[in-house]
Image (cartoon, rainbow, N blue to C red; front, side):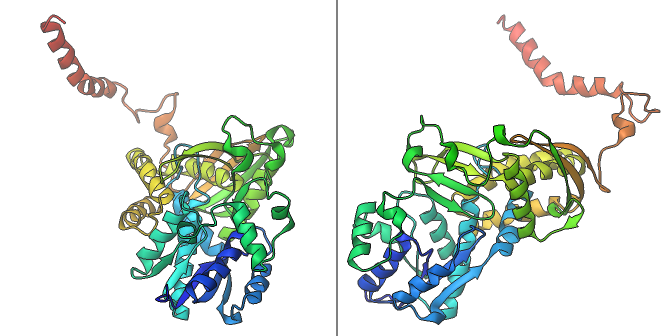
Length: 409
C-alpha cells in the first residue's frame, strides 16, 4: 500500500468518512486531503474542518467548497431540459450530484498533486459506480481507494468500535441507536433509505419528511406562480429574476408548503438489486411540470417525441454514472439544440400535493389558433385532406387483412 502518496477524500465529517480518514492514515500511511461539497444540503459544514484539523490535516489541505450555483446551473438545469425521469418517477436528485463531486475532487487532486482519490460509498450501492466512472473519465490514471470494498468494518457496530478506539468523535444519535434513516440531501432533493424503509410493506412515517407538509395539511387555497423560461431554463419567478440556486431554493419552499414532490419508490439499482427509497423533490417537480408546459407550445411535434424517446436513455446514463461519457455529451448537444426557441412563461397552480399548468405563452409559439379553432377557420385548414391521409396510413393494414381473408383465416 506504500505506492499511495497523497489522497483526496470526499469528506462529510460524519461517522463513515471520519473513520475512513483515520483508516487511510493508518493503512496507507499517506497524506490525506479532505474535500467537503456544499450542494445546498442545509447542514453546517464548518465542523468538518475542525474534525479534519483534529486528525492532523493541514489547513491548506481542507477544502470546503460552495458548489450550489454550479450544481443547479451546469447539472440540474441541463438534465431538466431533457425532462429527465428514471423509471417513470425518480427525478435523480442523488445521481446528478455525484458527477459534480467527482469533478471537483479531481480538480483538487491536480491542484495539490495527489495521485489518489477516495470515497465513502458502500460496495452495495450506485454511488461507488457514479464516483469512480467520473474519476476515471476525468483523470484516467488516478488510483481509487474504496474502503468499503477493502476493510472488514462492515457493520455500524464495528465502525463505532473503531471510532472509539481511535478517539473519533461520535454524535449522540449514533451512540443511541443511530439516525432512523440514511439520508442524502442537496438543493434538488432529500432522500431516505434504510431502517424502517427496508420493509417495502411498511408505510413511511409522517415524521420522516423534512421539506414537505403532507398534502392533507397543505393550505386549502391554491397558489399560482409564473415561471419565465429562456432556452429551456427557468430565469424568473413571478417577475423576479433569480440565480439558478436561488430559483430552486425558492421553488423548494413553495412546493414544500403545498405538499408537492413526495415519492416512495422501489427502484432497480445498477448493481442488480432492488432498493426502496423515499424522496422529496418539491422544486424539481415544479420545474419539470413548467418545462413541459412551455415546450408544449414551442417544440415541433416530432422533435418533442424524439426528446421523449431519448429521455429514458439519458436518465439511465445519469442514474448509472455516465454523465461524463461521450454518449451523454452527444445527447446533450441535441437536447440543447432543441431548446433554442423554448422561451416564454408558464402559470402553475400549486394545490395539496399537485402542480398543474393553467396557462402559457411564448413569442416562439407554434400554436395557431386560426388552424386549431372549432369555429370557422376561414379556409386555413381543409378538413377533406384528412381522408386521403387516413387511407394512405391504413393501406398496409387493409392489405394485411385482405391477405388473411384470402387464406381463409
